[in-house]
Length: 287
Image (tube, rainbow, N blue to C red; front, side, top):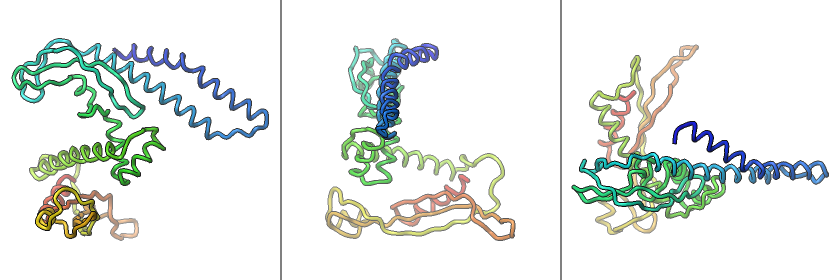
């Protein structure tokens, strides 16, 4: 499905559903003309729900078009590089930020490692539970700034996404692992001198370091030996771990000749001080 086909499909869908919005706006205007003092809020919510339904229908059309255009010939296994053999199709629900989309995906099996997968899942950037990239990002952001239960409520209220606490927790933790892997790779490149930014390097960098304790929910083995190994100091349902933080910034001089901190970047870890020093050094080198 090329760009022209997508544009035509979108225009067709908007035209077919425009009457629904026209009806909502006309009803609101009639109530206002009759002196019923209609509130804008309900109309805003209704139009937003209409936009989500239209977007979901378009996503279903788009995913179906991508699958139809996918090459049908055998490819390579992303795990071992072996030749794959097509074995029919598998149905799935793709979970997007606008709702669920049902689709059929081509299923292949590697002749070398005997692992099966759907190439479309990789092309769309889906995780193992068929969550779209946008959904993963939105959920993990909510799960980062609020407890999982509260994040679930916020996603339902703000994003019209009905997601349980466990799903919010799983997506947030999986995204956290991916981010941690990316950060580690970036730090290794910086320490090796491969991640230096282009342009003039800062003449002088300043470092601020601090540490505090963060409350953690107890998980797994809660014996004294296991807590000591994890660096946790107390038992019970709430445990505390020391987090070490570093801030790196370039000093600047203002118009009055007074030193002022520039833009700060941060790093941190729950591990020991030596690890924190390495992370601070890597962040400084990356700047």
